[in-house]
Image (cartoon, rainbow, N blue to C red; front, top):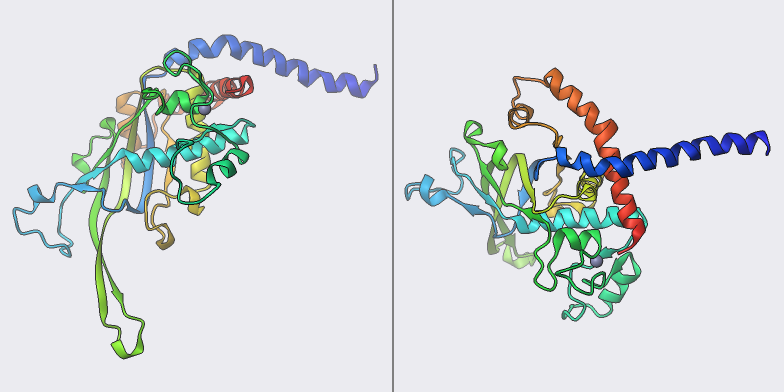
Length: 315
Ligand SMILES: [Zn+2]
């Protein structure tokens, strides 16, 4: 054997040893992770169409004025747009690891564009639910396992809405809440015809949340190491691609809305440590720094490896 090939073999051996160690370890390591995990979400402007629910009827006492900057109203961002955004990031992660992802739509759905489903199947998707014969018994691919939505299976990750409040001291981050300021934007659509002198044709009102910063709460009905691996990788993917049109959140993306800074909050943190993340007056404790190192060096790589193995196994 030549020197070169001997040298080449050493890292490969090490790698397989490491793999073996993880294969034994991540099953017990996952027991250290709580079923509730939190994603930090920060965005300057979020538009969720007409689907932001506000509590202005409580706060305004009947005197609500859209354009009053003193409005102290909160509301709820429903989980639907958040879920679609996360799922898309996770699908791309699965594809980057060489797998195919469950298509989110039914194969027989009436798409507005011909051939769109087949085109997606060529681009890294498999037909929704094609990865499982018995959806109630067999888990299918990792995306199906998480999101379900076929054969009456709900999926193993529960995505909650985000309750936002403009008063920071009223925000409970440990319950998946956020600081955020409800705004109603008014747009006048004017006539382009010279004779009309820019006469308004219609007025559009848009619900928006400004300066959102908080936690999105995800609960796992069942925990698996590859779920956390995919969540960590998917959230990093979304953060890295936040200015891509495809990976912005909600509507009005052409107007700079929905650019989201996101990161998985260290799942090893306890509640009081989670709160500290949002306390501008306090930094990390030593214990938090230690947990960050543990997460980055031990836990996260093990869970990502579990994800790689699950994807390698095929759907
Ligand atoms: Zn699938």
